[in-house]
Amino acid sequence: MNWIKQLGIVLFLSCSFTSCGIYSLSGVSIPPEIKTVSVAFIENKAPIIAPTLSPNLTDKLRDRFLTQTNLALIEENGDFALSGYISDYNVSPVGAADNSTASKNRLKITVKMVLVSEKAKKLEFDQQFSQFEDFDANQSLADVESTLIESISDNLAQEIFNKAALNW
Image (cartoon, rainbow, N blue to C red):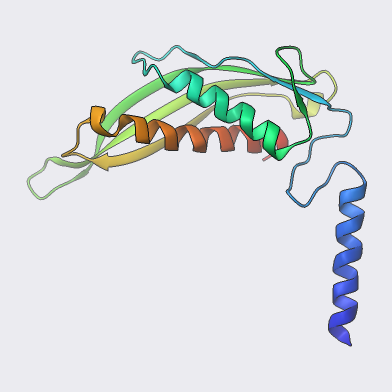
């Protein structure tokens, strides 16, 4: 009998949070007055240019908003307007092997992103986001670069989305 009461409370709270428009079971906390989002092309201004990085990251971020929110994606001047650029792309050694050489290398990508919202000023931000992936030092960057870019872009898109839509 006690579990029936608990189930009832859980169902009541779930319905309450999803009906007010600002909460959802997915955790998205975008105010209801925000109806559109624009994600400008994320230009690569890093000293090293990876040709697939900019379009890959831009597409992943746009896809996050399309699949995880009810916002309409528009070209520019959205209620949420995201813009930014890739500021750093570097490879550095990490982890020493027994003979004082690196056993791993790290690809790190940093992106500077800005969110502007006339309808939700408190959610605006101007910040850098960084993600990295380590790879075996015996592998060349050329051999693993596309896989690393794919993974890092996924993580960056999720982190930027979390900051904008989940207010993390």
